[in-house]
Picture 1 (spheres, rainbow, N blue to C red):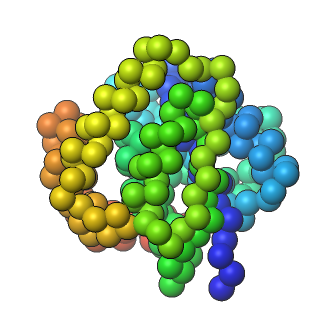
Picture 2 (cartoon, helix red, strand yellow):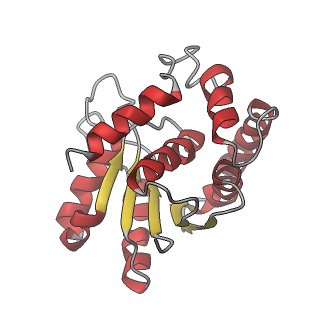
Amino acid sequence: MKQPRVSVVLGNLLSSKGELNAETMARIDLATKLDSELRSDVIVLCGWAYRPDCSLTIADAMKSYILTRSPKLAGRAVCQKLSRDTVGDAVFTRLYLRELFVGLACVHLSVVTSDYHASRTQEVFDFIFGANSFISVQGAPGFNSDISVKREAQSLAAFRKTFFSSSAGDLDSIYFSLRNNHPFYNGAIYPQIDEMTEVSSRIRRSLGCL
């Protein structure tokens, strides 16, 4: 099997009415532009239903946006609805692709986010996917600020601390740290995520419905 090319678009924020913010739309627009230059085999849209006043996931809202703006991409766009932050974007996208491309050890990823978020995203995805995959990160311009730079530094430090005992590319150790040490996934703030075997099983069942 040839190494697939995968575009991954990270969601940002959603309104109570299910409307994407300008930053998320800019990310999708950039991903669309990049796809016109180098076609991806699949486009993974990331983001969960984080708002208590809106049942729509960010991933589903992103796909609706694509349907209206770039309908030709809709057939290659898939929703990864499990991730709650950047680390989850990487972990659950890797799980999703492992089930989608069974037996494939590595992929070529083009990850699209915002300009201020690109450096941290690169480190996170490199760590989660390991050395066998090629990962490039592009950031939609116009969203950088002193506040965002400070928050990114804090988030990167927290990421390194949370996954200190995990090994790059070792999905078992990474998932263990995510489920037990990360406050977004260990039950401290949001419900604890299931064991990796159960999550993988749910992904397989969802792919069977495609």
